[in-house]
Length: 151
Image (tube, rainbow, N blue to C red):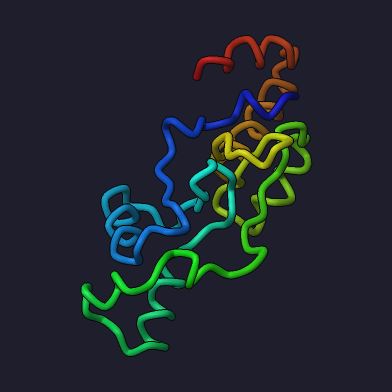
Protein backbone atom coordinates (compact mmCIF):
# COMPACT_ATOMS: atom_id res chain seq x y z
CA UNK A 1 0.00 0.00 0.00
CA UNK A 2 1.16 3.49 -0.81
CA UNK A 3 1.56 5.52 2.39
CA UNK A 4 0.03 8.56 0.68
CA UNK A 5 -3.37 7.10 1.59
CA UNK A 6 -2.56 7.80 5.26
CA UNK A 7 -0.79 11.15 4.84
CA UNK A 8 -2.09 14.27 6.56
CA UNK A 9 -0.73 16.86 4.12
CA UNK A 10 1.43 19.78 5.18
CA UNK A 11 -1.44 22.19 4.53
CA UNK A 12 -3.45 20.57 7.35
CA UNK A 13 -0.61 20.12 9.86
CA UNK A 14 0.64 22.75 12.29
CA UNK A 15 4.42 23.16 12.29
CA UNK A 16 7.03 25.68 13.38
CA UNK A 17 10.20 27.01 11.84
CA UNK A 18 13.58 26.48 13.42
CA UNK A 19 14.12 30.24 13.64
CA UNK A 20 10.83 30.83 15.49
CA UNK A 21 11.24 31.94 19.09
CA UNK A 22 10.42 29.54 21.89
CA UNK A 23 7.41 31.71 22.72
CA UNK A 24 6.07 31.26 19.20
CA UNK A 25 6.61 27.51 19.41
CA UNK A 26 4.84 27.24 22.74
CA UNK A 27 1.93 29.29 21.44
CA UNK A 28 1.54 27.02 18.42
CA UNK A 29 1.70 23.83 20.49
CA UNK A 30 -0.83 25.21 22.95
CA UNK A 31 -3.20 26.51 20.26
CA UNK A 32 -3.34 23.10 18.56
CA UNK A 33 -3.22 20.98 21.73
CA UNK A 34 -0.15 19.12 20.41
CA UNK A 35 2.46 17.45 22.55
CA UNK A 36 5.02 17.53 19.72
CA UNK A 37 5.31 19.52 16.50
CA UNK A 38 7.38 19.23 13.29
CA UNK A 39 10.11 21.81 12.71
CA UNK A 40 10.98 23.08 9.23
CA UNK A 41 13.54 25.46 7.85
CA UNK A 42 12.43 28.37 5.65
CA UNK A 43 13.01 26.26 2.51
CA UNK A 44 10.31 23.85 3.69
CA UNK A 45 12.73 21.08 4.62
CA UNK A 46 12.02 18.96 7.67
CA UNK A 47 14.73 19.51 10.30
CA UNK A 48 13.25 17.81 13.35
CA UNK A 49 10.53 17.71 15.95
CA UNK A 50 10.21 19.43 19.31
CA UNK A 51 7.95 18.37 22.13
CA UNK A 52 6.67 19.84 25.37
CA UNK A 53 9.53 18.23 27.29
CA UNK A 54 12.12 20.01 25.15
CA UNK A 55 10.60 23.35 26.13
CA UNK A 56 10.32 22.37 29.79
CA UNK A 57 13.90 21.09 30.05
CA UNK A 58 15.18 24.28 28.40
CA UNK A 59 13.28 26.42 30.90
CA UNK A 60 14.54 24.38 33.84
CA UNK A 61 18.14 24.28 32.61
CA UNK A 62 18.19 28.03 32.01
CA UNK A 63 15.96 29.04 34.93
CA UNK A 64 13.97 31.06 32.41
CA UNK A 65 10.22 30.89 32.91
CA UNK A 66 9.55 34.46 31.81
CA UNK A 67 7.95 34.57 28.35
CA UNK A 68 10.17 37.51 27.38
CA UNK A 69 13.25 35.37 28.05
CA UNK A 70 11.80 32.70 25.74
CA UNK A 71 12.01 35.21 22.90
CA UNK A 72 15.81 35.18 23.22
CA UNK A 73 15.99 31.55 22.06
CA UNK A 74 14.90 29.80 18.88
CA UNK A 75 13.32 26.40 18.36
CA UNK A 76 16.61 25.20 16.81
CA UNK A 77 18.34 25.95 20.12
CA UNK A 78 16.36 23.24 21.93
CA UNK A 79 16.00 20.56 19.25
CA UNK A 80 17.42 17.11 19.92
CA UNK A 81 19.49 15.71 17.09
CA UNK A 82 17.99 12.78 15.16
CA UNK A 83 14.80 12.61 17.23
CA UNK A 84 11.66 11.59 15.32
CA UNK A 85 13.37 11.03 11.97
CA UNK A 86 11.22 11.23 8.84
CA UNK A 87 10.46 8.59 6.23
CA UNK A 88 10.63 9.14 2.50
CA UNK A 89 7.39 9.22 0.56
CA UNK A 90 8.44 5.86 -0.93
CA UNK A 91 8.43 4.13 2.49
CA UNK A 92 6.22 1.12 3.04
CA UNK A 93 3.43 0.73 5.54
CA UNK A 94 5.61 -1.81 7.37
CA UNK A 95 8.33 0.86 7.73
CA UNK A 96 5.73 3.07 9.41
CA UNK A 97 4.63 0.35 11.80
CA UNK A 98 8.10 0.13 13.30
CA UNK A 99 8.37 3.93 13.61
CA UNK A 100 4.99 4.48 15.27
CA UNK A 101 5.92 2.07 18.01
CA UNK A 102 8.21 4.82 19.36
CA UNK A 103 6.77 8.00 17.80
CA UNK A 104 3.29 9.59 17.96
CA UNK A 105 3.59 10.63 14.35
CA UNK A 106 5.97 10.03 11.49
CA UNK A 107 7.07 13.00 9.39
CA UNK A 108 7.09 12.31 5.64
CA UNK A 109 9.50 13.98 3.23
CA UNK A 110 10.10 13.79 -0.49
CA UNK A 111 13.43 13.01 -2.17
CA UNK A 112 14.58 16.63 -1.62
CA UNK A 113 13.78 16.41 2.13
CA UNK A 114 10.82 18.76 1.68
CA UNK A 115 8.17 18.22 4.32
CA UNK A 116 5.08 16.56 2.84
CA UNK A 117 3.07 16.02 6.03
CA UNK A 118 2.68 13.45 8.79
CA UNK A 119 1.19 10.04 9.37
CA UNK A 120 -0.16 9.49 12.85
CA UNK A 121 0.14 6.41 15.01
CA UNK A 122 -3.65 6.27 15.13
CA UNK A 123 -3.92 6.07 11.33
CA UNK A 124 -1.34 3.28 11.07
CA UNK A 125 -3.05 1.26 13.80
CA UNK A 126 -6.43 1.84 12.13
CA UNK A 127 -5.03 0.62 8.80
CA UNK A 128 -3.81 -2.65 10.35
CA UNK A 129 -7.02 -3.07 12.33
CA UNK A 130 -9.18 -2.53 9.24
CA UNK A 131 -6.96 -4.81 7.18
CA UNK A 132 -7.37 -7.55 9.78
CA UNK A 133 -11.13 -6.98 9.99
CA UNK A 134 -11.53 -7.03 6.21
CA UNK A 135 -9.41 -10.15 5.93
CA UNK A 136 -11.61 -11.90 8.49
CA UNK A 137 -14.71 -10.88 6.57
CA UNK A 138 -13.14 -12.07 3.29
CA UNK A 139 -12.94 -8.58 1.91
CA UNK A 140 -10.36 -7.80 -0.61
CA UNK A 141 -7.64 -5.24 0.17
CA UNK A 142 -8.34 -3.35 -3.06
CA UNK A 143 -11.87 -2.70 -1.82
CA UNK A 144 -10.42 -1.35 1.44
CA UNK A 145 -8.19 1.04 -0.49
CA UNK A 146 -11.08 2.30 -2.60
CA UNK A 147 -13.28 2.85 0.45
CA UNK A 148 -10.58 4.68 2.43
CA UNK A 149 -8.91 6.90 -0.17
CA UNK A 150 -10.96 9.92 0.88
CA UNK A 151 -11.37 9.37 4.48
